[in-house]
Image (tube, rainbow, N blue to C red; front, side, top):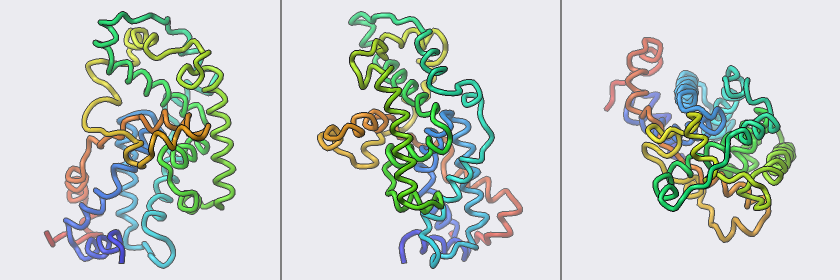
Length: 285
């Protein structure tokens, strides 16, 4: 019996700590996929909580003989994300041409040595914000496939099972998402093609002026975070061997953030909800 299965059994028996541990095991990953998918902290937090509440409401129906818990959970997660209401970013940035025209409309300004040091974190914030925006130019299905397949490197079999498609179909969709994203990055992004004029340091002051980067309230480089490549255990020398890895390494340098809402806060909300009081007799500590 794996850890998830033990925690589920104990949770259904009323063990509050087991339920908290089950949430804690999965919530950070769900949150980071949501953050990439929606490109909005508040929406990612809401989506994570909604997914976990859906998961808990259906926990008694989980059948380990039909699927591993992680597969079952990811199926709930991916379905929820794909069917969520379209957000403002998706309505306004309708594709790569619109996105890159918007970036090019921001004046480029060279930074002197003092500004480079003073704005170092804001330059990184600009880089992540810009490349996160590029992912948003993919349609929802492509975006999710790219995020789980290339950024977080979920195994193709697991990802395919969660999306309820075949592994071959998943690989085909991932290939198309890579092609579309990488083609535009190669054509316009200075991070992967030095012949392109766009450079994150030169755009940083313009991004700050427009309010897209806020030095007092950074979206990505704030709170507790690590790096995605540390989570998926990629090694730089391996990454640079393949062309596709050169592109997705940019995304593995993105922050892997801790959700602002912790398991304790989620549990407090659950315990205050009469519906969940009926589902879980949380008397064991």
